[in-house]
Amino acid sequence: MSFSKVRNAHKIENTEDYLELIADLHNQNGEARIVDIALKLGIAQATANKTIKRLQAQGYITKEPYRSLFLTIKGQKIASYSKKKHKIVYNFLLNLGLDNKTAAADSEGIEHHVSKKTLEKMEKFNKIKKK
Image 1 (cartoon, rainbow, N blue to C red):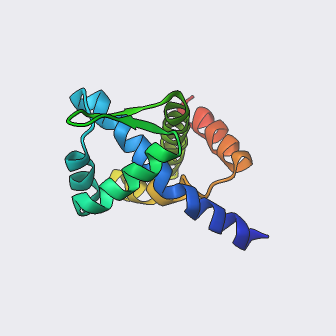
Image 2: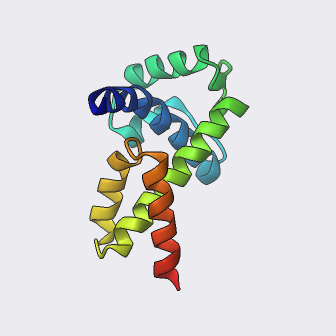
């Protein structure tokens, strides 16, 4: 049962990363371009373009020639939830006493595999630690 959960998480991991990155680029730069995505992910533009085409076909983003990428409502929901999960996990790791660099690196992987139940416990723990 746990193996299937991990396999399913791996299937959506890439999608969540791309959508979250597109949202972040829009917030930081006012636009998200394939060249910027490739640069941030450390991959070739052709690789990024292939994934962008898949995300567009799945209805997560829109793209027009010579324009930046835009998240659809469907894409915005996933990006927002992914960002929330990332933030909760990151803050949880900081609250455990990890340094920023380690918390940032580890939260990137954990966010995709954490269950809703565990995420809720992490969020509750974070609120207790704030007091």
